[in-house]
Length: 157
Image 1 (cartoon, rainbow, N blue to C red):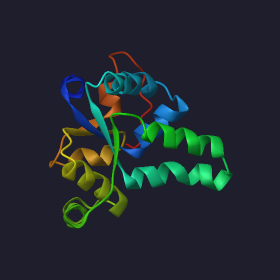
Image 2 (image 1 turned 30 degrees about the horizontal axis):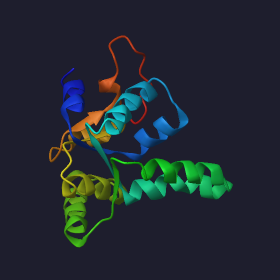
Image 3 (image 1 turned 30 degrees about the vertical axis):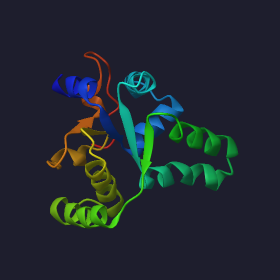
């Protein structure tokens, strides 16, 4: 429940790639939780930060399949007010290297975490159980944000 409180009080959150995918495809039970978050963004109560790594990861499948509608939908979502795509500068690149060395993260994951830190995020929202070991910034696992009694999907464990 502490995770839900942190989510509701956070002003700036980085969403990991899987959270965006779940939102875009409407995957329950996560879609409802993510819809509430995007509602906060629309009401200007919160901002979402996106790593350029996430943007690239979101676009791979639509490009592979030639799905221009999906490409446009992703571009539209990432262009909405309150959603900020952050590129990686050299200080954040060094931070990503340190995070990868310290936590054994894959480089794309380390870049995403470094982006959250560089952008001044309050927390990261995602569904990768391995990220729970990161201590530099709170990690809000989507399963922990579900309402009591809601069946969890268990991805990323």
